[in-house]
Amino acid sequence: MIFARATDIPLARDPSTRLVPWVIGFMVFLAILAVAGGVTLAGMAAGWQQGLTGSMTVQVPPLADDSDEETEQRVRQALEVLRRTRGLGEVNLLPSEDMVVLLEPWLGGGVDPDSLPLPRLIDVVIDDADDLDMDDVRRRLAAAVPGAALDDHQLWRERMVGFLELLQLVAWSVVAVVAACAIVMVVFATRSGLAAHRRVIETLHLIGARDGYIARQFQLHATRSAFKGSLVGALFGTGIIFGLLQMAHAMGNTASSLAVFGWQQWLILTLVPILGITITALTARVTVMQALSRLV
Amino acid sequence: MIRFENVGMRYGAGPEVLRDVTFQLEPGSFSFLTGPSGAGKSSLLKLMYLAHRPSRGLVTLFDRDTSTIHRKALPTLRRKIGVVFQDFRLMEHMSTFDNVALPLRVKGVSEDRLKKHVTELLAWVGLKDQINAKPATLSGGQQQRVSIARAVISRPKLLLADEPTGNVDDEIAVRLLYLFEELNRMGTTVMIATHNQSLIDRFQHPVFHLENGELTALDPIQPPQPEENPFFVNEMMHGREEGQ
Ligand SMILES: Nc1ncnc2c1ncn2[C@@H]1O[C@H](COP(=O)(O)OP(=O)(O)OP(=O)(O)O)[C@@H](O)[C@H]1O
Ligand SMILES: [Mg+2]
Image (cartoon, rainbow over all chains, first blue to last red; front, side, top):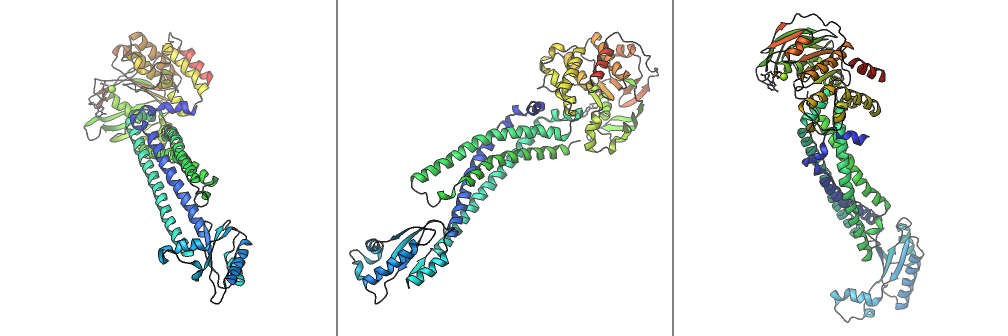
């Protein structure tokens, strides 16, 4: 019924308004990509902030008068403490040979690891940051293994978070620009529709139609156009995001960036076309009401 | 019902096309408006159906000074006025039915209620077979009848018809005039702008004569004698009344 009534003004035949679904579709597509980028970056930044992502390193330096066995003992104790800590996943001692490989650029090849007082490094994967109490780990580690140092990459993390926040700002700016473009475009399309149907609108007025009745026709038409466009744009947009996630999974990049793309993120993405339709309809209505209020 | 006092009107910055027009229409009256082409008949009607504002003088409509009417109040007033436009102003993309139904839809009348009225009225004006036709496929006279049907469908308090019989033969013209008279009998104030002298002679109603923007003479013809019309207008209009 509502749709049958929408034909009081033949908007569907306008060449200018026929472009609207395409443009809205493209805008929704862009917005989805940008929003997906934004929420991923937000999740990553939050993860980094809590130390959720990645790992920590524990250094166990050999003490000056320690024998190798004593050092091994200290390393075993450190491993023990770490393995009994809630929230931590894999705890791995880096083999001395690997250390040599890591140091090769500085020390040159063929160095005997035993001839150097190299600290032993333990790589710790953080499993669940919420369960992890960093201060507690630090305290217990210091008690069990004096001299052991825990590096949770604080400085590196802060820089990373700052960088991610900057990228997020870029993503949200893209979303804002896309929304602004869509609004401007809908305003122009609506105005051209108003101009093209001046006479019909005038006749409707003379017959006793209220501005709201006329605005409703534009609003309905805009909603339908936006619905068509948004649907296609959203399908393509989410399709690409889905593809990217699959690709990232295939590359084994599951732990860090992808853990942050859950159902909440998908929900936010579905809001994009809904918002697109709402903004389009409202813009059309406001444009018409404003233009009509300037008529006699 | 309507009062004009020293009304002047101009289009934009152009010359005055109406000058010092003063007259009054009593509620329930029926009158003709004549005058040569370009005299200002359509312009005068535009002032009455609130499509234009006077450049000077006072226009009172339904006891309201039109210059003080707020934009928001216009639709309500316009719904009390039925207009047959000289150039029809039909919606080209709409069928005959939808064109005639428009004033009711705009008012929010439900579809099943308006369907009966519209079909009946279209039968009366002889457009039963053109109910789904678009204006472009109709003859001039048929389009005119669509526009008349649209003007009377909501039983306006004031009916303004601008050359409503310009495109139809005399028989249909007379028939349409009976429709207007029937509406008038039920209380609608009617004013018809026309060149058709034989209609004016046949239907004895007061005549306003416009000449070069000025109202020159008020025809001293007495109000109409109630005369039974030979068509079934009564039946049709009263039938509609019961339907409401
Ligand atoms: N929209 C307009 N803009 C400017 N001038 C107009 C407009 N409409 C009418 N006029 C002028 O106003 C004058 C009166 O025109 P109007 O249409 O009222 O005459 P009319 O009596 O209805 O003539 P006709 O019998 O041919 O319909 C004419 O000189 C015409 O040129
Ligand atoms: Mg005229």
